[in-house]
Image (cartoon, rainbow, N blue to C red; front, side):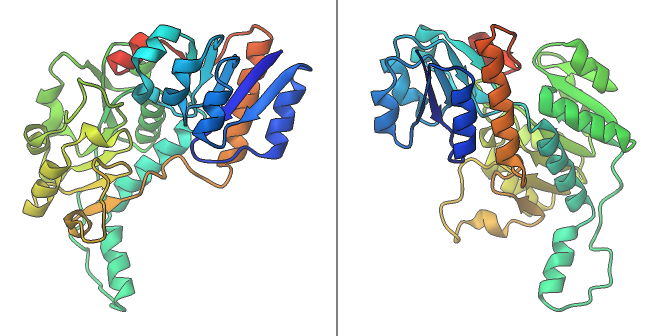
Length: 322
């Protein structure tokens, strides 16, 4: 008998999803881990883990785990000594790369066209017939991280006439194909920051990317540039960004992720000029659950048939930053 443990972070699996998983093999036992206690209790004889909500608590107890299907596109935060010890097949979920890329592009245009200022005027009942200090129409974008999301974003940008400068940890033909110029993380990408009207971050958080966007890097961008982060909050030094925005040194910033997350409505970040915050919602849309469940069911079906799985990654990939 195969045991499959479901522990999704953002949703409870639908009953239809559970039944479809059970139907994939007659002897399949499907357990929904509604709590850490349930996850740990069933860990020992679990072969497949779907999701990662209680993964760190569960890994010390597994005995026959063979595969983990994460629901994240960048599961670098899952790396641990227990994961190295177990060394299972590990797959991520890139089913929403297009949605996240469109969210990032929308954030960029929103800041360039000063839409937040128009909304504020509307809320105040003011017919503010002025250009709201709109920014220049962007011509060049830098995309940091040219994985699945970064490549989707690059395609959108190029379809809209922008030159795309990609920055990636290591060269790949797939990344090169969607960028006008591609720089590897260890070469002279810093010299090209001054060319960026838009700067997109899709990077995971690793020891190499933590606060990569510090005060020095942020000040190297043009004064009119807009920074958009849909990767991990810790890649950006939030204090430095807020300080620079208050100086009027950047055209703006749009963050779907922040580190640290504001703890109260009194946090000064909320009043930072030309800063737009969407609270980690880039991945969501009305069909999110349906699309996620279909992706995972197809993955389980492939696994049970011994077929190749989509989006396989290695522990070295997690450690290196992608």
